[in-house]
Length: 132
Image: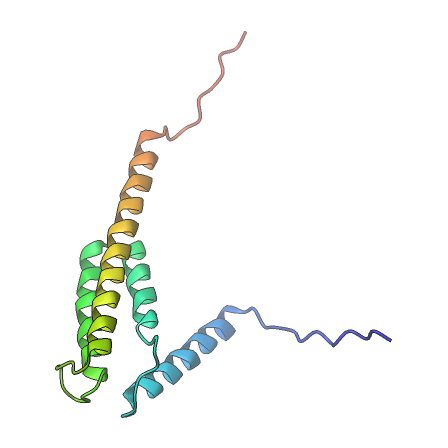
């Protein structure tokens, strides 16, 4: 017999999503504050934040967030508790993170300005047909 496993209902309420996000963010923060080697891709959390910031606000605020994220990343990488970056791999990680973030800031701000210019060019009301 091919019995299907029971479907587990997934709550879709806004409160559930907010709690889920906060629990994940707390877990990420707890993991980054412990004195141990960071996960290989811990900067991806910052990249998502930078992309959302440039999309929802301005490129200036995203650049400010990039500065903060780069400083936090340098602080978390070994040697711990110092802004000095010791190894080549860590330097490469910071440089690639910064380059990717600058590229995303430029790309998303350009897309945002093009979208805004298209909105201003299009008429607010649809054209009406003349009666015959």
